[in-house]
Image 1 (cartoon, protein in one colour):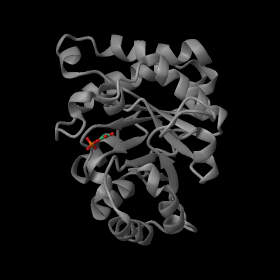
Image 2 (tube, helix red, strand yellow; image 1 turned 90 degrees about the horizontal axis):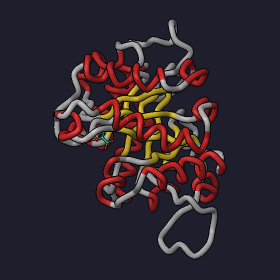
Image 3 (spheres, helix red, strand yellow; image 1 turned 120 degrees about the vertical axis):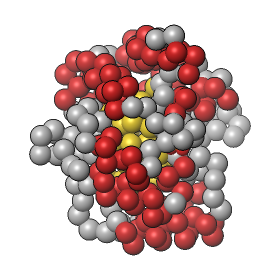
Length: 253
Ligand code: PEP
C-alpha cells in the first residue's frame, strides 16, 4: 500500500540491527536485501548496522538504492570522548540518517531529553538526518500519559531548534511497551499519537515523515502503512531477517 499519491511524503523503512551481526552474517543478510531491492522504488529503505560494520555495510549496499544509517552519535564534533563517534565521522562513511533517542539508549544508557536534543542538533550540523525516537512506557500508557510524555520529548528538541528543522528530520513513535515484545499498538493507539505529533509541527507537518516502531512484522505492516499519518516503520527484530525485512519494504512501496 503506497500513499505517495495523496501525501507529499515517501514511505520510509528503517532497519535497526542493534548490537547484532558479524561480518559473515552481515554479508549474507545484505546480499539478500540488495538482491531483493533493486531499481526504482517509491519507498526509501535504510539499514543501521552497529558502528563497526558501517564500512562493510556501505560496501555491500554500494550501487543499490539502500541507504546507510547509524544507531547513535555523540553530540560533540571531536575531542577527548573515548569510544564515541561524531556526526562528521558518520557522514564521512556516507551515512545519511542516524537514530537519536532510541528508548534503549534513554533507558539503558540514561540519555536525557537534553542530551537527545544536543545529539539531534549535532546530527543536523553534520548533515545527517536525525530519526528522533519518542514513546511512552507501559506505566505511562496505563496512566493515560502518553501524549504528555511525547509532548515533553518533542519540546526538549523544539525548544532548542524551533520547528523548521523538522523539515529535515524523521520522527519515530515507538511505544516502549511494544518494542521487542511482540505487542503492537492498535491502529487507534498509533493514530492518536501520530496525529498528535503531526499537529505539534507547524509548517514542517506536511513534509516530516513519522514512522511507527514496535514489533512491526510482515503480517501487520500493511495494515499500519495504510493509515494516514504513518509514513513507514522503524524495525528491530524484523530487520535481521532478509525475507521478513523485504516483505515489509514491499508493503511500504
Ligand atoms: C526498535 O528497536 O526500534 C524496534 C522497533 O524493535 P522491534 O521491531 O524488535 O520491536
